[in-house]
View 1 (cartoon, rainbow, N blue to C red):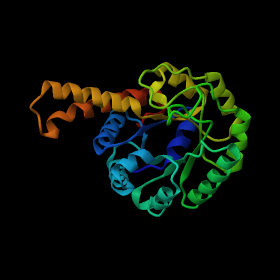
View 2: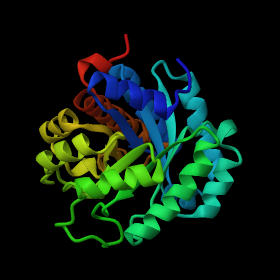
View 3: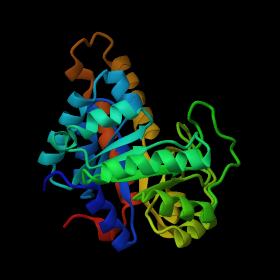
View 4: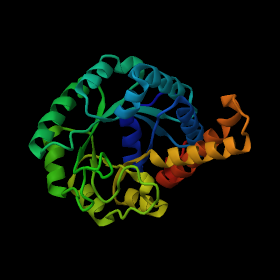
Length: 287
C-alpha cells in the first residue's frame, strides 16, 4: 500500500455504506500505534493532526512529514488530514507544501462564526484547497466540548446543512447530533434519526466528531444512518495514559523510554484495531 487520499478513502466508504476511522495524532509513538492497529484490523484509516497538536509541536512540518512516511510504509491505505484548523496563516503554510507533506485533506473550522460568516470563510478556503486537489471538511452547528462553547441541545438543521454544503462546495460536513469532544465515558446520546434526516438532505459525506464519547453500538447505528467519517481522539489518550501509569508503577526505576512506552503503544494499537472493526464494516476490510 501507499499514502492514500482522503477523497479515495471516503468515497470508497460511502460506496460500501461504511465509514472511515479517523484518529487524532499528537506524538509519533501514537501515530505508529494507530498504523499498527489499523494494519492488524486490515482497515484503511486517516491520521489526523489538529491545529492544537501542531501548536504543541511548534511547527507543522516534522509531525506531518513523519505521518506521511508512516502512511507510505503502511500495509493498509492511510491518509493524512489536518484537523480543526482556524488559523488561516497555518493553512497557507501547509497549502504551500501540502504535496510534499502528504496532506490530502483539511477540516476548516469556522463554526463559531455566524452562519453567513461561516459560509463566506469556508467557501474561500474550499476554493483555495480545491485548486490544490485537497478534500475539505467544515462544521455546521458547534460540536460540544471545545472551549466550553456549545449548549448541549444544539443540533444541526438538515435544510441549513444542505444550503451550507451547496453554498460552500465543501466535500464533507461535521454535524452536531449529540456527540461532544473530550468525553471520557461513552455516554453521548446521538440522535440517529437526525443523522438519517441530514444524510438524506445533504449531498456530501457526514462526519461524526467526539466519537470517543459514543458507545460502539451507537457508532455502528450512526454509520448505518449515513456517517462516513468517524473521528476519535480522547479515547486513545485515555488508553495510552492508563497503560503508561501502570507501566511506571510496575517499573518505578525505569528511565529508558523504550522500557515503559511499549505498554501505551500496545494499548493504543489494540484500541485502534477494535474501533476500526466497529467503524468499518466487513466490506471495508482490506483483502
